[in-house]
Amino acid sequence: MEEKAEKRRKTRLAKILSVATLLVSGIVLLGIFAIMMAHRQYDSFEEFRKKAYISFYVDVPENAEDIRYYSYDIVLGKYSIYAFTPDDQEYSKLLKEMTEKYDLEGKTEDKTGYRKWYLMKVRDANDPQYILDDFPTHLPFDKVIDDDINDYDIIVYSPMGSGSRSHGMVVKPDTRRVVVFNYGAR
Image (cartoon, rainbow, N blue to C red; front, side, top):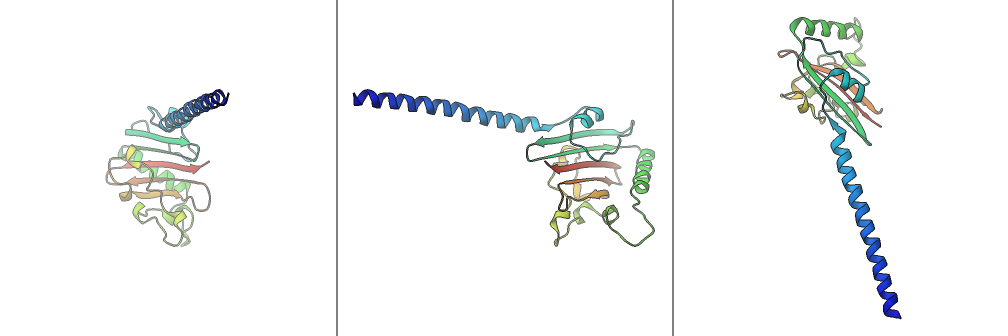
């Protein structure tokens, strides 16, 4: 009698372990699939704007070249990055619009907000006293540019600070490459 009870207990335990193994395997596979689907690249600015996390954006000029889009969106965080190279005229127009819109060359000496970062190199956008203002160089900018993001000049930058979102636009004047990013937590 004890042998039958022991055999039933072992059979039940084996079934429970099998089901648990299947559940864990399914969860792992679902997690891997979710992570793979969280990284996305797009074919058009319209598709990118509809599906990616964007709170700050700059329109991509019609004649822009080498346009690249990239986003990541998963439970713990999200970001979107895109880059393009406009012609000389569109590049000048874009810089003028941003300078006026965000009062980047204001008449006062007070350099706060966007003006604090204006024309600073990305590599210099850090503060040892307040690391929450550091430029998010850890984002995968290499998905949209072929050079080093640290060599770019900041035009607009809103650091995460003690909040949960950051955004910005940086440029590389010698190539006219423009990079726009949005970065946030859920």
